Length: 76
Image (cartoon, rainbow, N blue to C red):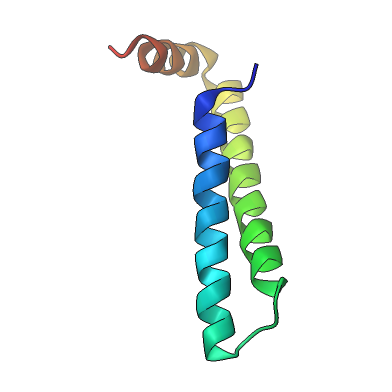
């Protein structure tokens, strides 16, 4: 089952992309669709970087990462 936070994350970013697209179209800087592509390429790069940092941190100290994740899951 998809996590509700994932759905909210996707919707939030789609709303931002639509808003940026409208603003850029009003100014006439870029054509339709280019803003979407640029926005989601940057978003994918950010997510990939976060995944890389998580993997690196887990390799260095798995117990600390598991402790942090467990505390976030249990809201401690």
